[in-house]
Length: 170
View 1 (cartoon, rainbow, N blue to C red):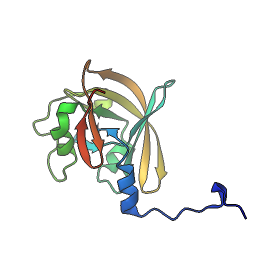
View 2 (cartoon, rainbow, N blue to C red):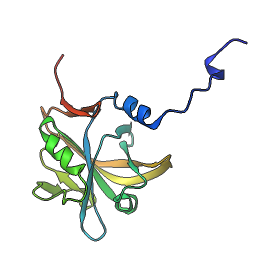
View 3 (cartoon, rainbow, N blue to C red):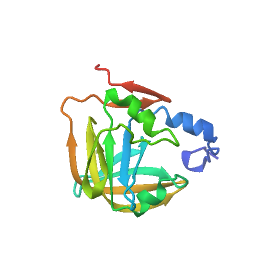
View 4 (spheres, one colour):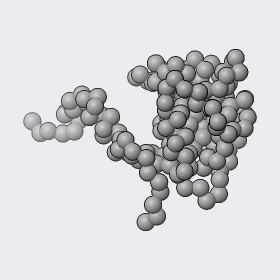
């Protein structure tokens, strides 16, 4: 019998090997922010961001089902996806740190639905929380972009192989 791709079953990916392979895909770095019903601010560093549609303007990102901020994002009406600039690595690390006030000393303005928009970012997408899909151990959030802006000339912060980089012209 001839071997074809249709009858070869790959071995399940080892979790560490899978994560390491995913790390080979260079991504931008975002901080997703929202305001909880009690008025408190939440935010986290994420690189699971992608465009979905131009008409209507839709973007997506994902969050672990175990995340402590899951109730705020799943029940809230709006969030902001802040695309970080090359000079904002410290901000990315701050919003990835647990058990601190991530917004202490951070400049921001109120965006759509009260979601914090961080100052100095390369771009921001202010989104209505349109839909959510549970897949594996994450929830995929699809946001309808109500407003977006960008900082002219900003260089992006990039994450690859577990390290931060900045854009280098070819």
